[in-house]
Length: 126
Image (cartoon, rainbow, N blue to C red; front, side, top):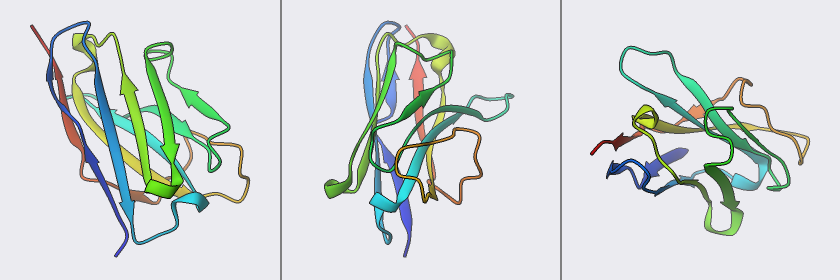
């Protein structure tokens, strides 16, 4: 059974850090682009970042550029989102999602993602 499971969310003060994990099973992670998305209450879902199959290409939303870092460990079937210098506006449910990609070194945040996790809550508040 194909699954993506997010973890690592929680409550953090402004300026703090969190590392989210997206643990996968039921498919070969190395064949898939992984993206991170978020949705705050009353707002549309936003693409945050993506990483190519081989990890050689990443993309970030302008709102998180320089603060968030995406990485992957295909052997551990896990993708990470390191979030630093967190701001209250980063508060949202964060989701990871996947799509199978033929090119190994490209990813698109606005592509059509096939499989989604259930999400993990991130709250940035003092």
